[in-house]
Image 1 (tube, rainbow, N blue to C red):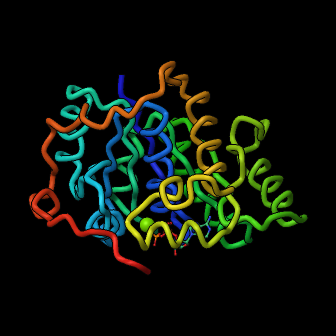
Image 2 (image 1 turned 120 degrees about the vertical axis):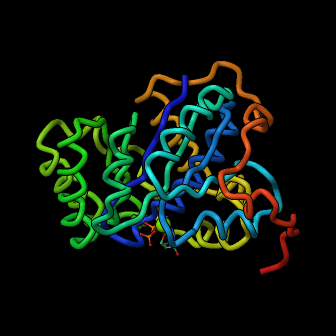
Image 3 (image 1 turned 135 degrees about the vertical axis):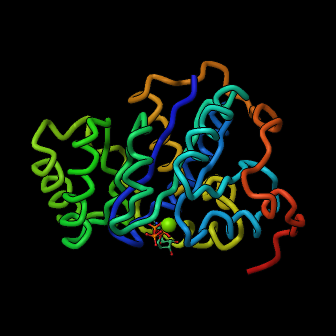
Length: 246
Ligand SMILES: Nc1ncnc2c1ncn2[C@@H]1O[C@H](COP(=O)(O)OP(=O)(O)OP(=O)(O)O)[C@@H](O)[C@H]1O
Ligand SMILES: [Mg+2]
């Protein structure tokens, strides 16, 4: 069975793309066969893939709903167990349509008023489609009242017990995330022993529990989805660029 996880929030810069990459690698390392789909025309993940010194996870850039539906079918048939979808911010018709297919919507939210307020509109869209969701507090300070206040406000916004709706752990603001993206890596590859990698792996475990999709025997299942061609020929054909110094 494939689980489709959609990263979504109208607010730009909250961490959709960064978390999609981080979680994709954490899921792979936990034994899942993983695919990334990006529906954001900005192409953050496609550009990350071009910098990437490895071939997995593959990224499919998809910009219409018919292709999206087809791709999900194909991926599930090919044995992919987790598909993470990175969507565009703003008021975007494709994002709204994609939500319909989410087994879990993750709403990255920085602990600042602009993100917390913007998440209300996103939450409304998710709720109108009756999709499961959770907030992910991202770019959080190490400690302090700000994070607790943001969590409380989000909990109130969701108007139900916040426990199952605010994912744990919170993801702290650290350069590792930016440096990993710049190197075409995920944070658990860039600094595997670092705190950021730990948090992302913890976040993946939280998601696994929420979805009930934990794998008993962790292993890299990197070749499971090799039979599915990339949606964009230019991505499939890209040269393998070695990772240079930054
Ligand atoms: N936990 C974090 N710590 C430090 N930097 C982070 C963290 N999460 C994201 N960033 C940085 O914040 C910026 C925005 O992140 P990202 O591109 O993932 O957001 P986004 O929601 O996908 O934005 P957009 O709506 O433009 O697609 C990037 O420079 C990214 O490296
Ligand atoms: Mg993005």
